[in-house]
Image (cartoon, rainbow, N blue to C red; front, top):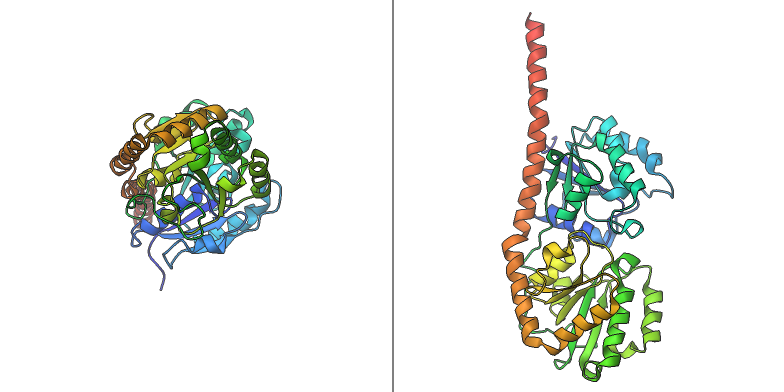
Length: 398
């Protein structure tokens, strides 16, 4: 029996550990199943371990194993897929997947949505004019844009010249039931820093340049060298895997802080991991609207984040956390030192951060916004189709 639910195909560069991908997981897990079917297509690969985070059993995952170079080599594959599966919506995300909107258009997919989540390491602030031009050229194939922050929304308007009526801002949401404060800092299996007398700074993110872990390590090294009390009681836990693992491990050794830093690797227990931190630090060089930062705030952690991308939209500086300029190692070290020595203030920042998540960044609000967008876009294309059918019938009667 044919499933009557419209199909949404989500096209991404890869489906593996990351904030963008985690947002898709949240959307798939929480959007009511009776409205849409879903399929995830990764231009490279869908990591089996990560796909298991999707709890729905009706979601199909496809890996295309894209070779190096321009993605037009995949156009015939995707064109045939779209013609065969007949999705109602194709939803691409970020520049790496944008060009796949073209075969969707040629295949007659009625709704083609493109989401901009943030900029990559090769275009950290969206200033590259070539990439602006590329986005503008592909815009003729896009039905509607989703911007995950005010800054990205402004970028699409001002730099890519997308009309305001074609852009919808939908911020990420967080599951505040899963990510919730513990009773103080809770011990974490395998952690060498479960001693309750310690203050544990934590970071969660893939070990790649755009996440700024090298700046964090240097800042933490500066903190413990100039502050004898912090040298005794401060520790740093870095959660995540990635291509810079060896380089960052060597940097920790050169900073002389091997006994104070724990590389926890990739973990599937992030809610529990958050509860094993006292302070969350996000040293990113570039960000959109960060799921991980929202998860830390929902967990009741005070946060220190770089003043990039959507971070200032999430962190109310001085009330829910601290913001520092990206690349300011001394400023980051000073912020960590302030929260190390001010536990009462840290606790107040953490409480205020959770309150803000509950009020403004709920998962239900995010899922509802995407559901409304999908339904609105489909109603916009179905009405003309129905009129066309009625017109053809009327002509036959004549």
